[in-house]
Image (tube, rainbow, N blue to C red):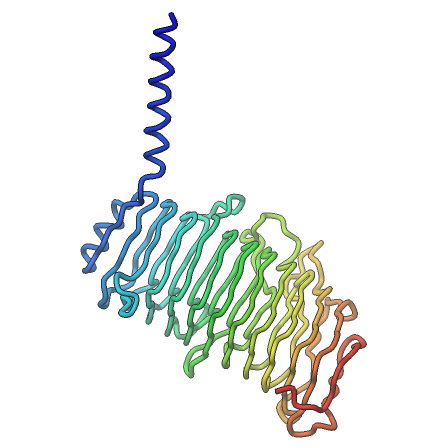
Length: 361
């Protein structure tokens, strides 16, 4: 009996060891050099694959669904592959812990990159990283995004460069606990560009930091927005966005620096705003369904605003259905370059610790 038990224990132990060994084996590495090789590899992807793509030009139009822990990167980071044309460059659906780095995507008619939860609004995708990616010339007219993200949690977009787009440079619909950092947005003539970054559809706990916007759309940062009720994540959310932090960015040009649109709590701090063309910022409410939170509870602190009185229609654009009195202003520096003596803005709430008429640059 003891011998049999020892044998069973040994078998179980060996099985556990082999299982653990299988889990710890290095991920499969696949290198592709042509479009046909790439298509063939995508048809047989396994979880944990590291896909290296050689330099050269590839058509757009690739779709990956349900593959976890996938890494896609250049074979030679100094000479990244370029994905040109088509409706979309890449579409990733339900790809948890995807890493996409170092590629170039350009000239798509619909979206450059599209990442989503496969329509399962109550089952978010976790842990995607997008870094050192360039997306350009998307659209050019209409709601066509450089990077479109729906139903993603713990997403990081880092050190990406986006130039020329029709809708949003980065569009978050129902994304949470995520970071956009170190990215560069630059608008181009002929592209409709409604926003540089848009955070809407129930989006929460997102940090936007260390980014630069140069004529980055009509609203370089759209903190909130307008979303059809079936597209909210989580379903039933009663805010377009909440708990946003927008800090240490440089925002130059465009009609305003930031639009707060149906956001229920945010911070806008330590940013540099240069020469907005119509308003310093906007406070709006576009989703008016019963029970939805009005735009409210935003802290605007320690920012540097440089503007020209001749450019502005008014200092702040306040729409109906908002709570501008709930905004808090602390320690901002305001400088009207063409009329320094008129640097003090007309704000919807009293400010403390402000500095007026001195160039903060």
